[in-house]
Every structure is written in C-alpha cells, then in structure tokens.
Image (cartoon, rainbow, N blue to C red; front, side):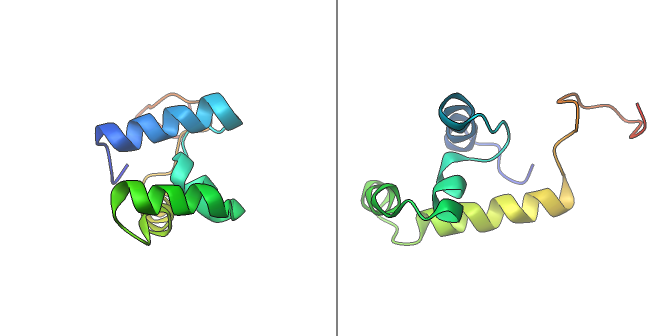
Length: 80
C-alpha cells in the first residue's frame, strides 16, 4: 500500500473491528459514507480540515497500484 504508518494501520484495524472491512482506513470509510460528525472530529484532532478526504483519496490511489489480495494473503503468483 502507499501508506503504511501506524496511524494508517490503526485506522484500518479500527474499521475492521467496527465495520468489518479489512483494508480500508476508518477515515476513508467515514468520508465515503458521509459521517459528518466523525469527519469534523478528525479535522479538529489532526488540525487538518480535509484529513478524511485526503485519506480516502490516498486509499483509492493505493487500490489502483496495490489492490488487496482476494484471499487476504500476499503471494507472487496472482493465480494462487
């Protein structure tokens, strides 16, 4: 993936626990779903008014360049 910092991994783990989606960061899901209160809280917490939008755009870009494996496993042979 493009972003692999602790915040990105923590956000993806929170999304997995709360929403069941394994690879998408919670901030991206919030932006995509229009969770306005969450988006505003993250804007204040990170002092960045477009934090969730930026995370969503980076996540979308990562899907183009490094899509998550279908089985959840990484393998050099795409037909495994």
